[in-house]
Length: 629
Image (cartoon, rainbow, N blue to C red):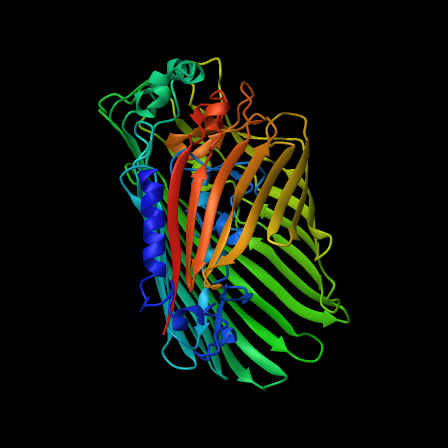
């Protein structure tokens, strides 16, 4: 209550800052309204754009919508298909299967993927005015989440941006401290003869791992004993384990116009260089992974990965194709143990690539093909995308894809300080053949249907009969898996009231229970939208409800930063109810949320993994502030 009163006082202080007497707001403030539509400032939203590496353009939007509330989190993305961890910055568990999109090998440590920027998450900016975006959000004890972005144009052809996101959160459970630092620099240059865009991203994740509650503490948690409402009193599996993941990416895409204007010949060169370091450190040893090597006093597993992808192709733009690209890709990498002189895994692979775009009547066709020439751990990639372009009443997209992906180099070769944990495999490529259909209409809503056949499905298991309960075992399923996902979204509006609904149905056909997801996931938000104080302050307030059916959720395995399959305990069927108040003043959006307000009514049956509880009820707040000059 004290925090809520402070926030309300802070909100009204901002509103009354420009008061010069007479009424609650002065006349100039009441006329300002939304920064992106104000005529007095001659502001033009079309002059503020951002685009990704595929050149998909998005206009800046400072409006207050329910989607902004869904994306106001550590990931800056909608978490509908994920289960949030009990501390910000820890690994998310999945409510759906994440389809492979890359045919090039990665290091592994796959549980970190949900917390990291991918190349598709990096945006380049094309702005007529300098722009700053500031984000702040409270966390769980002794810390905060901050994210700052600045972008400007040096001239009409050159733009750059700088951003830095930092997190520190102690958490409510023992040894669950999390921290991260993510820095991004981008630039893009456009002229008639030369186009270039590049980025540099540095990301560091530091997670204190506790492995979940011990068996005794799980009983104490289920008992609802008020003594254990202070979650730090519950014992955990690991007392001092620390995972540190450090990744750096440099990406540069350059296009040179060799001849022509309408009928053009262009030369394209693309470089993507990546380095990754991962270390797991633990001093207090228990039996979950067995004993450590003789003469070793503590665990310190350190691995490094380096890769460089060079692509050179010719692009033709003429009357037959909007663009046609043909080229070669060279990808080389190395992966090795920093604590050992054991043989490195390295490979130099080559592929040829074809990519073209063509508009035919009502459809835009995009075709992409990567075909391997040599290399054991690089795969083939085929994507065909059709989008309708003429009908304004609905949008329709159909995507066919076949992608081969390596599970991760660390799952091929790993030597730990734990004497029982050593493997040297040659995992097969996982092949995913999919069809995806997306349809949207203002009256019907948005529908996404995807069907996939997965060959050589990779998964990690443990021997439940062993004393070493977390000792991982790598597996690949010999039979195929058929995975079906149907997702529906629709927002209903009735005056000031809105009802936002998202539902997902999933079905898995498999011979063994290794791909486990809930059959149903629902999210419903009921809220009211209102303008107050002479239409200067936008308010959005209501309840957000989420629930998923029970299923054998995967367990998080700290040593290898991955999830392993288990078939002994189901989680789910517990409702998550949040109460939120969102507000917008000029370019500032404020978010206040009481998370999981019904936790005391759930009989402590809420879990993120079989041994890690979901979040208790708590109050959090934050803001996003856009500044223009």
